[in-house]
Image (cartoon, rainbow, N blue to C red):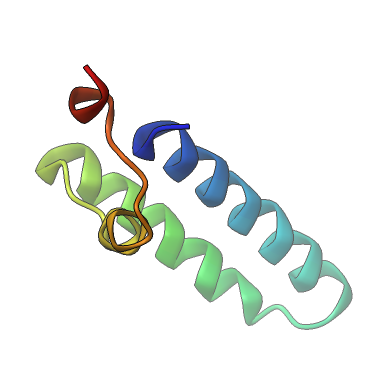
Length: 67
């Protein structure tokens, strides 16, 4: 699996989990949901996301590196 696909899966997972936590635990979890959304927005403009750095450290390759 490449970084781009894994990044979308992780972001979607974080959003779903924090929405559920905000419903059953505390509304403050929505702050984390907003943080994930802001990171997705800025990565659309800059083509960089902090999670991509962690995934690269973990050895996950991007689409361009697999060819």
